Image (cartoon, rainbow, N blue to C red):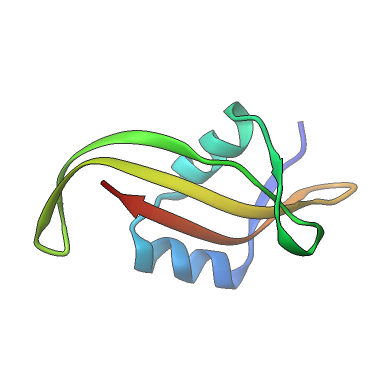
Length: 84
């Protein structure tokens, strides 16, 4: 199993958008990958959230990492988080 490394940009976005590193790793390890723009890959997973984000209540949080599957590691380029 390849290690997963988060780029600096991904780490910054992860904190700003409300994802955790363990959620990102979980999504990459457990969900089917799909092609994304620029030859990258993506996948997404819904998590039970049931709390507030930016003063609004959300039941679900969806984490969507964008990454590259390199020879020796998986590099997360950025991460998107959706609340609904």
